[in-house]
Image 1 (cartoon, rainbow, N blue to C red):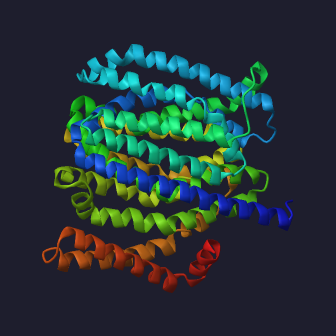
Image 2: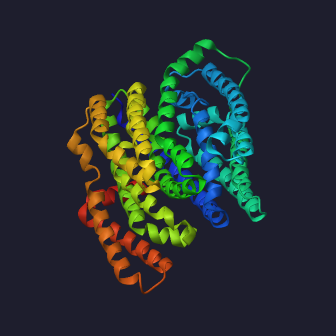
Image 3: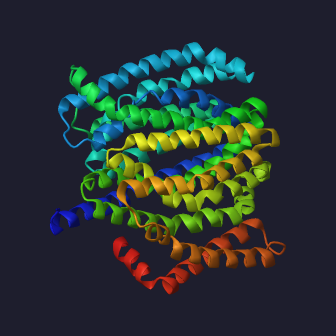
Length: 483
């Protein structure tokens, strides 16, 4: 049984990890969103559609890049230096093969989507595989140590450099190549920084035994990533193939906003949960409580953010991106309906990985991928709004299965599990009502930007006051954690 001192130290490490993970995610997303905003103003839907089409092919190859070694290094209790060296050289070798596949397969992808411009885009973006191979092991080492401060600094500097390159190229008239330059410079800066701050260097050795030990865990992660690809990117593929690059551009903008919210509000904590849960894998009661706390903390920020974005989507798109992107509004609204589910289910993977059951997550990802592909294939004939609806419907259809799997592994109390978001949901409903009233009375009197600003300020104040009145104990608990 862990000592109270050990429990306190782990909690403190986890809270600091969340803090620096938040700084990384929020800072990176603020910079990325600023760059994204400027590029969306300068470039059109077709440009973003082309990059999204290229990304479908690259994301498929990305599945086989890391082979799950990063998660295996983080999760493994007995880690030897041979594990690190083997992972590094394996990743580097795979990255060379993937770059060759990109160069040779670019023509096939171009013909498939009937977009000749894709050939050079895919070939240049393939350089990213070679660059990223030099940083994956160092990333895993810092994650294992819960050294998220280092990762945050590296990420923020890299994304800023990439943003400067991308914006500069866009103003100089490089069009789609602005986004290509942004991504490659971001990757390169990240590698240079992490090599500068890391004291680990790979040695010229490769161990078959250590490779098998990592791969036995990582193959499940690779399978999860493969199913995630079909679950997440099959919509892009089908939209691009049947509806064209412009329709995919509108869908991409809406999904990008949804992804930014997910990264800011959910992934921030999720990055810390795997190493934290892994340390609790032999203490089921503490693991259950850690999961409850992660859901409660996440719901406090995800519920109002996702649902607030849903009701304010018309104003956000018009003010931030411009009227040319208004077809993205209904897609954005529908996607944000998954916000409540994300607060609960985003940590399932971390729990299953931490208790050494990656095969369970693999099975769940397989089910989600199959349902998504079927749903998207049926829905695409009715347009991008129908595709987004299929994504949301799938999320809530499989919710009981996701809860059952976690119950089976760590024996959660289902009512306690579901209650974690009750206060957040109540406060969010009050906030949404107030925002609806503001929009109803002011939309025809003042500009969209003024409506958006007033709604955000008053909505945040109303939500905080609601939580204080509905769950004062929780309010002070969060305040103490923040302190």
